[in-house]
Amino acid sequence: MPEGHTIHRLAQDCRERFAGWDVRVSSPQGKFSDSAALLDGAVLDAVDAHGKHLFLGFGDLGWVHIHLGLIGKVAFDERGTPGTVRLRIAGGSRGEHMLNLRGPAACELLTGPEKQAIHARLGPDPLRPDDDPDRVWARISRSRLPTAALLMDQKIIAGVGNVYRAEVLFRQGVDPYLPGRDLPRPVWDAIWADLVALMREGVRTNRIDTVRPEHEPEAMGRPPRRDDHGGEVYVYRRAALPCLVCGTEVRTEPLAARNLFWCPACQPARG
Image (cartoon, rainbow, N blue to C red; front, side, top):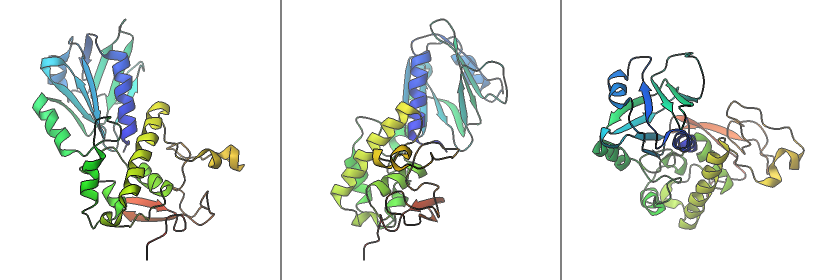
């Protein structure tokens, strides 16, 4: 499932291509046809993102809410109609841009209050400048659950997925099984600041890179990472490989329905 930086990058790309212009809206697949007919020819006047949710605003007509889920994909400016397209938007200053959405978990037209209800059930998002990390801390600091599980709960903090949770805990030297209530406040502040920086960089580059300069392939004389997810990481999907910092074998176990990755030496359990 795409992490929050991907959705914020999609919001940026939609804003640059379509915002302020009349757009053509259709649903070649047919599952969004009624709503597409209402929106066709309207101005796309706002774009918003919160966690893993994307919102495209059409004034009084409402908001298109998109959640990609596990298999959803967005392609820009492709020609032809390969695959099944749930939503197609065409427009721009010269009508030169196109968005094709396939396989989303959600693609629906919402009212303003319905959109606000989604925001209300989500936690603060490190990529939303006005969101408050104190709200996250209030939840984490009362919980007996492992910190790694809490970071994956979208009701507590929105947009953090399996890659960012593993990497930020490694970067801050936090045992992923440490109960939230035992996490020191200064460490939480460092985690939030690190997430803000890493995810902003993810929006900029459209990939996840979490290693510090001294651990880049060129600096260490090692080959670049080869993985479908791309990017240079410390522990994510590196189970049984040596830690880039200390050489200890990276471990993995299921946690919160996803595979957790960590270095037991760099992220020691508290006795």
